[in-house]
Length: 185
Ligand SMILES: O=P(O)(O)OC[C@@H](O)[C@H]1O[C@@H](OP(=O)(O)O)[C@@H](O)[C@@H](O)[C@@H]1O
Ligand SMILES: [Mg+2]
Ligand SMILES: [Zn+2]
Image (cartoon, rainbow, N blue to C red; front, side, top):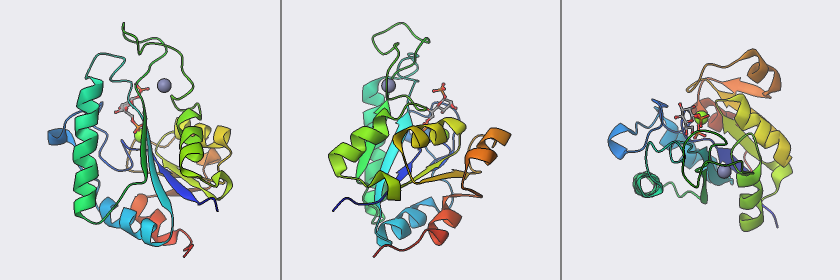
């Protein structure tokens, strides 16, 4: 049977978005987020990170840098009993940069590519799933993928009026969302 997932934006939801974070030295978990992720897992959800990493297309860091940081993040979470079910990233940007990753793609949020790929690979029930982001583009990706729930948190970029209008709920952080999310198991 298909399972419900929490799709998580990374920068501004899991870690502080200080701008194109690419090294573990600069990766700061937002307060309470690791416990919140564990709680969501205990409530029966798959946890799937979907992150735009245009810093790769822009030439600010490499895909290898991203992979190294992702491995570090994954292990830091596993160390605290949080197992992520999937991590999807978009290395592209439509105009910035000069390499192969500078192109129009279907994975950069607001496009739904990462969410749809995860749904196929992990057998996710999109209608029962949540997107938790900090930007309108996160919610637009959720809408385009047919997700049931669109949530914003105030730990990242400033929430715009458009964001307020699109979100089902705006929470202070992932902590409050995790407390309120219905238990599935
Ligand atoms: O929030 P997620 O999707 O996990 O990751 C966003 C980051 O890749 C960066 O995305 C950039 O947007 P542009 O990609 O330049 O539009 C800016 O918002 C940066 O501040 C941010 O660090
Ligand atoms: Mg973000
Ligand atoms: Zn892409």
